[in-house]
Amino acid sequence: MHLSSLVSGDFHVVHPDTPVNSIEDILVQKNFVVVQDERKMFYGVLTPSDIIARPHKIVIDCIGTVERIDANEDVESAYYKMIKVNQHVLPVFRDEDFLGIIKMQNIADAISCEKESTVSKIEEMQKQLEEERKRSQVAESIKNAFIRNITHELRTPLNGLVGFTDLLSSSKFNDYQKKEFYHFVSESSQRFLSTVDEIIELSRIQSGDMKVKRDCECSAASIIDELQEYYNTEKYALERSAILIRTNKEEPDAKFVSDISQVRQVLSYIIHNALKFTHEGFIEIGFRTETGAVVFYVKDTGEGIPADKQDKVFIAFEKLEDERQSLLPGIGLGLTIAKHLANSLDGDIWFESVEGDGTVFYLTIPA
Image 1 (cartoon, one colour):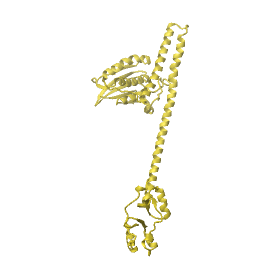
Image 2: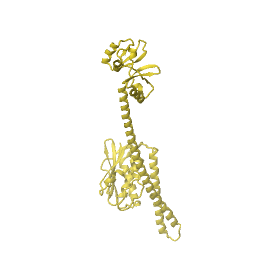
Image 3: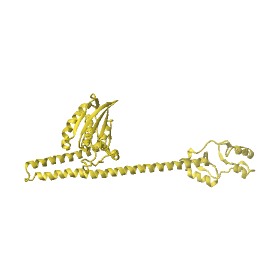
């Protein structure tokens, strides 16, 4: 803090020729007076103690200013000067120009306020450091999860590609067996490609390279029909042939303008996730209209999401274990990407789930 804000120009002035008795009368009402002549020349500061100590001296001899403060000094330096001379007021100068008076109480208040401010700044810094530490821990956790998942999800399909390609080159297998090998090669290729695509997609989102084109007139009914048709075929590749993929179009078709490819992509991530965790029953794709929005939903009869894991659903590289398999395929990015894409469309995605009783995911898109 600079001294200038504490210097006061408001004080009582007496002339050097003022009699002592008159000064005594003034000091009865005032804590101090400044002695100046008609040319504004500064002579000193008088306090009651000066009059008591030297009552019969002329005013000039009674001036008790034995120290002064320079305007460029800091607050603490001024404080220690006042302590040294045991004065509650001191004059402030810039070179030889008298600027005004500074009081001990003002300095003490300023130091106290500065200390409080310093303590507050330290507490704020500690809070920021703690938040940074937590972010660092989260980043470390995500990194470890990424390394763990990516090692498995890249090595597994690559091993399949290398292994079955070698088998295809052997002459000891018949055409039927080689056809099976081709199937495994294709499946491993798709799994590998899907993993790389998800990593690239998340990278584009985080770098801000994702472009949104809200220039297409969309039909909610058409979108869910297309998805039903696609996943009625895709479910066989995911070994979920027994699952019924159905739509619900009880409401009239809803038209809206958005980026149709991203809307399909978000819903595809949700349906694909539902298929992984549903072993019997159905997956229903539907929509409803609300004020200013279209709400899509994907309902499944799967295992549901445990309550203690629901806050991790949209976190990158977090994967839920399946009681029938130690760890499901995928690197845990699908719903993370879906959440980002939904937000980029000015929409949102959320879910309701009860363990053992299925899950419903919702996607809201502004109409």
